[in-house]
Length: 579
Image (cartoon, rainbow, N blue to C red; front, side):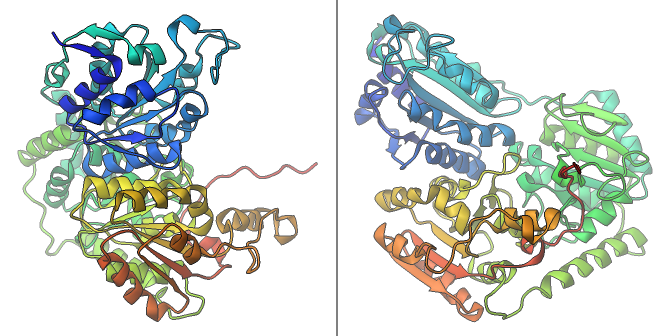
């Protein structure tokens, strides 16, 4: 057995896992770990903030399905990862996060950057709610086993981030160890559904007159896009996707009908509420997707019968009662449902099919509504900016977005045509996510163009990561739609309480950031500010064609109802009670 120190064990194991990149910022608490990567095949990417490191790993995993490793120092470097870890945890995105920790012989002595007042070396408790598991390596000889377990937990079942706290002396300590083979700790099959439940679900679907399929993020994680399309085409059932499954069906497919919920499509909400059977696959039924569970707005369950498939049994029946609940992998169970359904029902024809005709009519009405938003008004709308981006971005390009107005417009209005072409934070709704997630997406799929759409407020939260892309020459384009402020929240205050009760920061001409000067200061190779919408497609095409980081600012309207989104459902936000 080779004699290796802790850092070398981590480097060798990441190589065996096939991890391409280790992402993070060096600190005194990680120097022993990092030294080993001078001789490693794993490339080290250094962002400008630890939150950005986690978002980069997150974007990478969403784009290709594989995990990266993140490293940080002890103390604030470690705590800076929490928002990124929470974002990944809520959306079930795999990664392993290494943080530095006090020397084992000094635990509880309050050494520099230790959290110790309640428990010695207490940082792992901070990570407990936002990771699948948090490990502490108290002995270098235990490190290989912990590494094996960490990647096994991160990538199997319902995926998610895993945390490993590595004390500084453990990073430097040496031992005679064997580096485990990851293949020996992985399941070599995926869990299917219970046969009786599959049969019961097939009976419901075969008898349904108005079936609807809701394909959630679990379908994307399980790579179930072919299975979902095959089943939908057999049933001639409309398919709704969610934030995390956008692209599960090409959005020009005749059975794609958009989304349900607060900013869902009219077609999606109308078809979902009138369904007699809903098949939900890998779907959480969140408040935004369900119009805060208000009956008859986005779903009507019951009387609509629900077949709910999920690898996590805690999601089944959590928010809606189920007629058939099936625990299992989305890809396997969808294939099983198709096989069972095929013995009961021939493919449903589209000709002389009133339900199919209704699907086409409702989708055409929604598309006409979107087309009406493509005006040449100045300042332009975010919808108009996205229309130009769709013209400039090749069909197989990736679009990335963070929380706020751009995401609320990208999600329902910007069509994508394949899986993993939409990279967006979902359940944690994290501002600034896309700035570095786009870098990760490009590293995962270097042959595809990647464009991140950010609001000016969101972009400023993580804009330092532009420097990371420039340093490593990563070919990402940022499109900042600048409406001079945090208008999503301002408009929410206006809607709830009126203009006289608004507390907001208005970014005026005198105080607003000059984003092009900012990008120039970061040495971005192509920069452009666009005011007139007819000039935007050309600017975006040039940015996408540029070999290296590129930046385009589109000046968009500062004031619009509902922050530019088309609100077709409801969202329950508690109002003030009268006093």
